[in-house]
Length: 182
Image 1 (cartoon, rainbow, N blue to C red):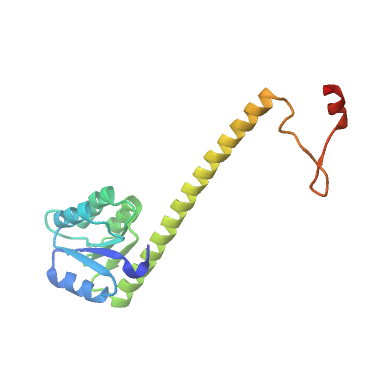
Image 2 (cartoon, rainbow, N blue to C red; image 1 turned 135 degrees about the horizontal axis):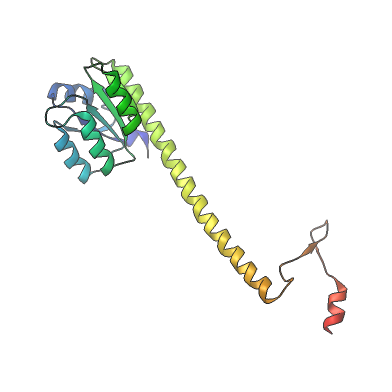
């Protein structure tokens, strides 16, 4: 994922907050939703790298929204903004929903920009780790296949997979094996 082309979903029931966040994050592609339901509909039709949600919204609060959003897009980084200092809610959001940051309103623009940058960097690291883990699994499957072939060869012709190497890299042949076969 290229950080400059990151797609961010902003969810808040206050249009002015959405406009302010969109302005602060103008270097990214932002999509806005005025409710959790609208945000979930958008998440079903487009992939987002990061989501910023208000904590207190009517009908569906930010935690409920993020829990449902996470089921649709588990790899997106999640940030909550709130005007309420609720330590228990913050702990719950971080521990159960993997929320990356919990930012208080009114926010400092640099704090939002920094949180988004760090969140996108984390997403890149997680994607790279996932890619490397997949590569290791593919390589392990190839090794397992090669080991099975070698075991089958060894069972058919005992000693065929054993090679004696000289220090210069040449193969040392045991001449006594040739005499017995003639």
